[in-house]
Amino acid sequence: MDKFVIEGGAKLHGTIPTSGSKNSALPALAAALLTEDKVVLKRVPRVRDIRTMERLLQDIGSYITVENEQVTLETPRIVSPEAPYELVKTMRASSLVLGPLVARAGRARVSLPGGCAIGARPIDQHLSGLQLLGAQISQEHGYVEAAAPNGLKGTRIVFDRITVTGTEDILMAAVLANGETVIENAAREPEVVDLANLLLKMGAKITGAGTSVIRIEGVAKLHGAEHEIIADRIEAGTYVLAAAITGGDVTITGCVADHLGALTAKLAKAGVRILQPDDTTIHVLPDGAIHAADMSTEEYPGFATDLQAQYMALMTQANGISIVKETIFENRFMHAQELMRMGANIRLDGREAIVAGRSNLSGAGVIASDLRASASLVLAALVAKGETVIDRVYHIDRGYENIEGKLAAVGANIRRVE
Image (cartoon, rainbow, N blue to C red; front, side, top):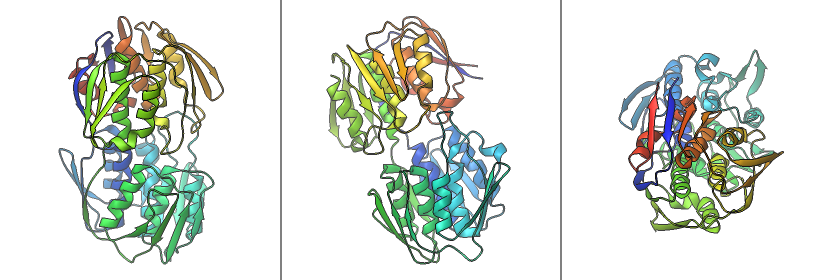
């Protein structure tokens, strides 16, 4: 298993480019199942979850070619409408093939998803939505089976709670349903909008993406399209926080600054100096005196849960006491214990973490428990005294493209070892 070895103390200086969004590319890849024509996706990050999804789609029947960050998919027929546990046990996004498979092939058999150990991620909203569209659903032996031999029919779906992958799954199912589907309490995340834009290029009829109500008029058939994946706002936000925690002077390019509004607003309250020269650039300046600022995660456009762990790492270096509240997942403080091993002063109280700042972190051996927790440990290691060894970095490889190379290019003393 690979590890990261990081020697702390270096201030970051330079430019970091943003890769395409993993969380946008995964549903886009699944959407290619909706047509027999060629779908070309550009700016697809080469991370572990993407490779897993590509292998899954090949098993289902897709022909895939990869050239740098461009992925071309063609699925003339669905060979096997199944996502087996052995292939998707490390990736919760496997549920994203449910909607496309039922819509196009009339049936699907998908293993209940795995992924990060950050709490329950039930797909009950996916399943109830598919049932309302006319699919018959059964579960046994860890698999979900869905069947709609006579096709899906448009309907009104009101989610009990906001779900990003649920919104995406039902959106993909509804584009081939007969009649109009209305999704209420839909997720508003940029990744949902990006998926809708791809589907529109493929011939779908969708309005309201990016709002809480999405309307879809089903069509008989979709065609091929070319589409560029949006920038990864979580990756960009992680590098913004890396610059802030080290007191660095770093420019993050190729991002969508508007997608990070909640983060940059919170950092401004914490005293971090940030400039936005244009819509695709964020410049973090050095010497901002960081002070504690409470934060609560929320659905978009609120503060992203995927940046909570990294923000907590920053608060260990802030003046004062901050409260970090996690409202999305019930078990997303697993990184706190590892940060405490490095000297952080953190007390957990249910879904709140009370962080006493200006901790003198010291290098230690730590274990990454999930994708974003591993990123927070990298950030803490950048300012810790001495050497930190982070084990199980396969978690970070699921969602960050060459994070060690990007950080090393701006002065971090980080290397990967086997």
